[in-house]
Amino acid sequence: MSDNPRNVITVRGLTKSYGATSVLKGVDFSVARGEVHALLGGNGAGKSTMIRIITGASSKNDGDIRFFDSDGRERSETEGRGKVAVVHQELALLPHLTVAENIALPRHRKASGLFRRRAAAEQAFDALRMIDQDFAAKSVHKLVGSLSLHEGQMVEIARALSSGAELILLDEPTANLTAVETERLFAVLRRLTRDNDLSVVFVSHRMKEIRQIANVCTIIRDGRTVLDRQAMEELTDADIIEKMGQVAGSLAAERAPPTTLRPGASAERNTLTIKEPGFKLELLPGTVLGVAGASAGPATLIEGLTGAARKKRWTVARAAWPDQFGSPRTAARLGAGFVTGDRAHKGVLHSLPIIDNVMASRRVIRGAAIAGSSEGAECLDLLKALKVKAASIWDLPNTLSGGTQQKLLLARWLGVPSRLLVLEEPTRGVDIGTKREIYQLIRQMAASGTVIVWWSTENAELLEVCDRVIAFDTEGRCAGVLEQNDFSEEKLVSLTGMAA
Ligand SMILES: Nc1ncnc2c1ncn2[C@@H]1O[C@H](COP(=O)(O)OP(=O)(O)OP(=O)(O)O)[C@@H](O)[C@H]1O
Ligand SMILES: [Mg+2]
Image 1 (cartoon, protein in one colour):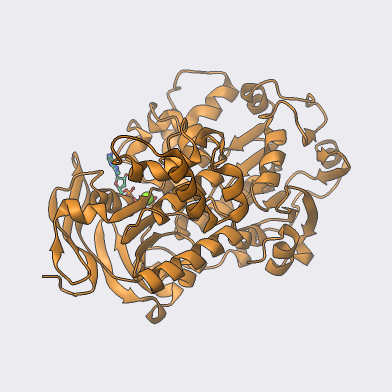
Image 2 (image 1 turned 30 degrees about the vertical axis):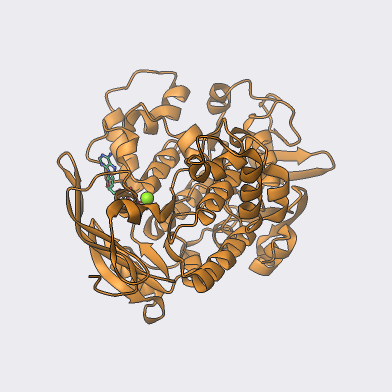
């Protein structure tokens, strides 16, 4: 019997090791019907590992996982897993199939081996419409490989929502979504939990969102449950952060003055100008420029600044720089760095060890492909600054948790003297404790004269750390630039047209 007749799943004493590394050391976790359950913990706590074990993607070493039907009767493991859908932390879509095929395939596969195209398109449309009507109409027949990261995230969520599952596991589903999309997703989740008794497990490092959507939470720390099924309203943010083993506090007090380098002859010479037809923005060394808005605008700006696009709408100009960086190598040597938002496909070098991932840009700049003798120590220092715990710098990055892989990408540019550093969602999936450290590191890099251009879908962090914020509306047009004395969430929301 279930300990609670309303449970859809009960996990007891779950353990998991990879070789000598013990990752889960006895996790307890249970989810009741109709609830949104936040699964919380710092980077590397074991959240994704448990989710993979629940869905059967990984095996467990020991412990008990039981699934129950709505009458409280235990289901077989196969039957139980059949009622579970998951959105993984890194997208798992098939790029050479269309959106409709990706959404419908898991369900239509059984129909006498024939894939019913029309039915699939209808199902996909209905699923996507729950989150975004326009996107649904435009994208059903597109190839998934042609979508942006953020569109892919919506497809993946739609697939889970339309799967008919009774339990949906969302591993950081909002990491690539804007405020308005997140709000729509939450509305759908609220409706499905209320009307259909759906249960949702929600993993996120964004405290505000967790409060908005979850009724109950479980906190795991270092592979153990430290708080089992607690009502969210009984906990303060400080309680939660402390249980996760992280340090609370605000960055506001430690914030450096806006532009550390005063305009002068040398600053003038080093000023960066970014522009598009009809618009120009001058950035003094040491400026942190935030970029806000739905993906279309920021993506175009970043393509232009990093030289990724052939035909560029946006360009960047600086004395002694060519009109265009011929290659990422040239860009790096001239002092222009880039942290991609698509860590799984474009950022992490999956087949190379951690040290190669961290030292990559330094090697390009120094012109050495082979590890120098002091690299090991340098790499360890960088990892320490970002609180990365790795068994060995010679391990592959896929032995690290999602948020920890994100830190590798940032470490690549940390302390590299550069003129311009473009950051795409650099704190995606990074836990609360480390986010603060990253904000400080970004300010430090700015203080040394680097211009930082930083796109984030989390408005609060932009307003906390940046000197100015350039906002794009939902059509991808530049809607204005907010100066620091003008900062407010309301202004940003109205400029970006993303009022929920
Ligand atoms: N294949 C593997 N080999 C060795 N260690 C692994 C492997 N996969 C995961 N780990 C380790 O397991 C621990 C838990 O990782 P997991 O991905 O579950 O963390 P998480 O709670 O999801 O963190 P995040 O918030 O960063 O996503 C980490 O210390 C990670 O390094
Ligand atoms: Mg994870």
